[in-house]
Amino acid sequence: MIDFEEELKKFHPSLEIEDAEEAIYNHDLTDMIDILIKMTDKPKVEEEE
Figure 1 (cartoon, rainbow, N blue to C red):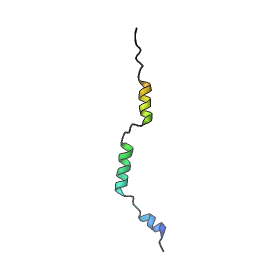
Figure 2 (figure 1 turned 90 degrees about the horizontal axis):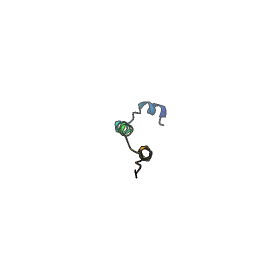
Figure 3 (figure 1 turned 180 degrees about the vertical axis):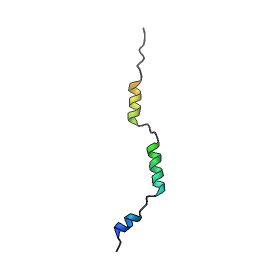
Figure 4 (figure 1 turned 90 degrees about the vertical axis):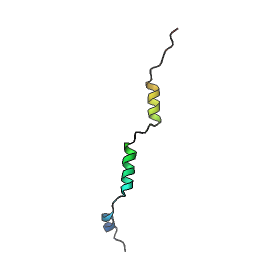
């Protein structure tokens, strides 16, 4: 029978997963909210007549 507690003590996450996690969290992604904020923050150019 498998001793799950003993197996959990031996468990180490894959380095590839840790590297991928770091790359994902450190990568600055532009999402729809960022685009909307940029669009609404632009000063409106009023035409002078």
